[in-house]
Amino acid sequence: MAELVEMVKSYVLQETLGPLKHIGRTLAFGSAAAALFGLAAVLSLVGVLRVFQTETGSVFAGEWSWVPYVLTSLTALAFLGAAAAIGLRPPRSERR
Image (tube, rainbow, N blue to C red; front, side, top):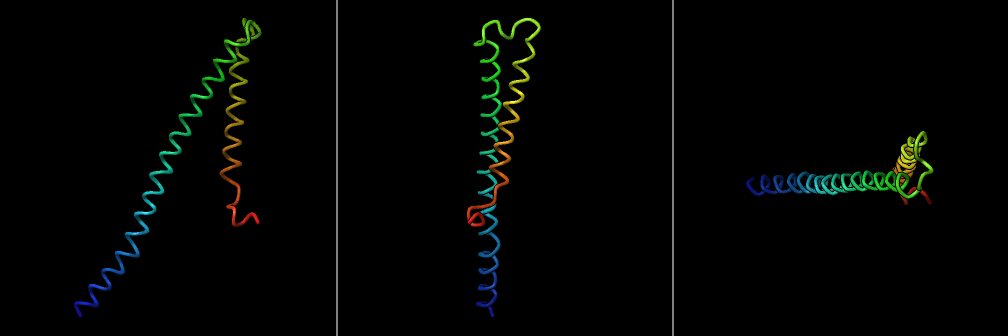
């Protein structure tokens, strides 16, 4: 009887803790990747804004000073669209 209890306990641990550890690892790496991607996107957009503000000379000076912000917002929407397209596409196994 002790062997049966030990075998059942071992089976339950194998079938519950193993997958839970895998899920935890996947969530940890996914969260870290999402945070780093978000930081990279924000820094890239700040760079794009600074390029529009400084490298265009006097094109966006005076009454046109709002245009770099609109162009940066459009760039952000393009980033979001690309991320959504990548995230919503079906897995490779279903594409064939």
